[in-house]
Each structure stands twice: as C-alpha cells, then as structure tokens.
Length: 340
Image 1: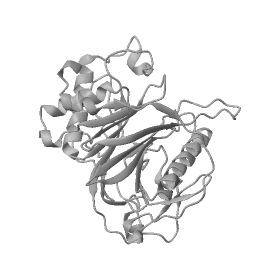
Image 2 (image 1 turned 45 degrees about the vertical axis):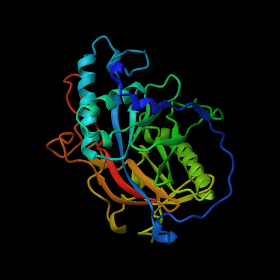
Image 3 (image 1 turned 135 degrees about the horizontal axis):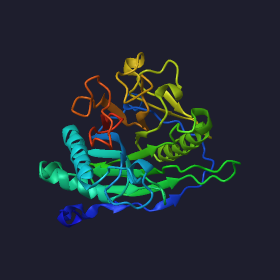
C-alpha cells in the first residue's frame, strides 16, 4: 500500500519523543478570546478532532489490544481497508484544514488515509503535511494531518516515579505550529488517561496531565502566542473548574502549579451546554472531547459532527464492531473554526 504514496506526502514525519521536566513557571494573565484582546483576527482555519477508537492496522506487532490479536479475533486486512475508507469518508465530509485523531496505531496509517483521499478529493484540498507520536511500546498514539505546513513539533511525556503505584501507560501531549498568512497558531493535541480502572483511582494521572497542559499553555502565553488545545481528555466539561460569571471570554480554569484561564465552546451562550455530547456511555451523554482557546485565539462555529452514517439511528455514535466489521467509532468528531 505504501508503494502508492504521492510524493507530496514526503513532508510527513514522526515526532521524536521528548521527556518534559515539570518546572515552576511564573504566573501570566492573558486574554482567552479576541473579545478581550481587542485585536482583529488576521487568519483562521478549521479543525476536526476525533477519537477514531482503537484503530490498528492489519499487521500484528504484539502491542495490539487483545480483541485484535487473540486467536479468536476476526480482525483482518479487508476490515482494515474498510475502516480506512470510513475514516477518509468522515475527513472528506468535514473538509477541515487540520485533522487530529486519537487512537491511531502507526504513522503508516496516515499515509493509508491520505491515499484513500487521493482517489476522491480535490487535490487542492488534500493533506500534504502530518505527524504522529506515541510512547514506546504503547498500543496507540495521536496522528495529525494538515493542509498547512507544520513546524516545531514537540512531544511532551510524563515520567513520574515518586508514587508508590507505578505510572500507567500515558499518551504524550503533542505540540505543533500551523501558520496561515504568516500568522502562527500553536495547537496542542491531548489524549488523557481514561477512567478504566476507576474514576477516582485514575484521577491523579489526569490531574498530572492537566498540570502539564496548563504549563505548556502558560509558557506560550508568556511569549504572546495564540493557542488551541484539543483532544480526548477523558474528562467531562463538568469536571473542569468553571469560572463563574464569565460567558464570552474565559469560562474554564485549568488547574496545576499555576491555574490558567481558557475558553471552552461547550458552554453555549454562557448558560446551557451544547447538545448532544461527543460520547455516549452508561445511557448518558458525556462531553470529554474538547477545544480550548487561549491567548487571543477565538473559537467559532463549534459543532459535534454527528450528521452522517457514523451516527446510529438513535443518534448515538456508531461504534466499531470487530466481529461484524461495522461502525465507525464510539466518539463523535468535534469541529470548529479558530480565528487567530
């Protein structure tokens, strides 16, 4: 399959892992949206974030989840190709400039998705740039495709050995810059620890990842850089600290060594929550996939991308079934346009 790559995808590369040491930083107050900053946006781009749900390729490397590599698994090449087509279908329908996907297995899948888009997409709308990162020996990572060049890709990993219980496998935070009309935007892609094993028992690791994200945003704000953070945070919007009385600018506070004020579009008009959520679990909607803006970036046209065959008749995400080879993902994609 890789033999059919179009040459323009030569810009695709793998970001090397970097172990980031948590050091104290000075506090910094920056506006969360352009309404506070008084600055006129000069550029914008559309962004799609999607947890594609344990998307492995058809080669078995030993790190796959048991459902995919057990002797009774029905996972195979034809099912992989069908999933590729479905992922490409959603990306094409979204027509977003930057695509961020959680739970991809390998960088080669970005090439495979690109090839699927080549056969049915306007070449001017293709994604000629991308990157992928995951921890060593981890099953899944984060993949990014972009119509605009990516620069200064950095991967930040937690390495904590001070607790009596060992650190579980954690996905890294991936930072990269996208420039439109010579105006840069820092995008920070996240996939925080799930609640598998118990919400309370795993909360400490999500808190550590929240602290890391707040520190990365704070560092960017000190340089006057506009930021969009996104990903699957495995943390409902209710679980973040809401800033009372703020509706049009900062409405969420990231907690850490220094708390950072950011904006979430889940709070529709400053009152109720945008509906539906992006994830349906135990008979209720959850909003665990997020866009957060800071430093003068402004989120507009936020939506849960739930109108398509990736939605079940009941309106829930049509999750993937290995047995039947049906479905898409247990998460809905979310999309927005960010001005910066």
